[in-house]
Image (cartoon, rainbow, N blue to C red; front, side, top):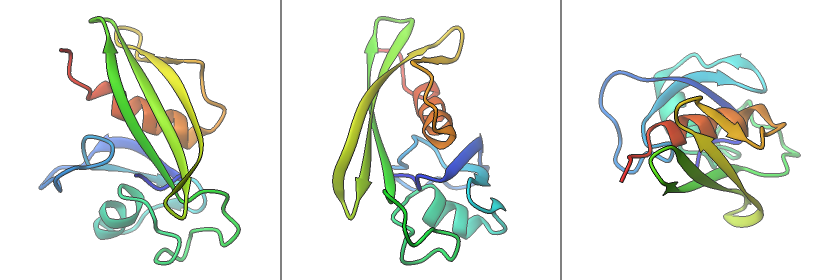
Length: 129
């Protein structure tokens, strides 16, 4: 359940907490306030979400506070990504995207940059079964 404003751009070096929501721990930027200054903030809030009561950057009037992902293979070439937007641990929206492994693209392309970047990060690490 990553922060809905987090824009991941690279896996972070070092220890990875178990059950990382995006399948790894990522560095990146805040879609609200730009660069994130500390690794602890990236790991604890950006990557793991529900930062609304802990992160000073999180908007008070946010319509959701976390994004959750699951996936399944559609053969060797594609991954179906299911996303859920949550507010106060309650699902408020969900949808499906198709990730093409070779092109590293999503269909449809989400208008929300954070949803797009997190979906790409998650799907790219989903194992081929």
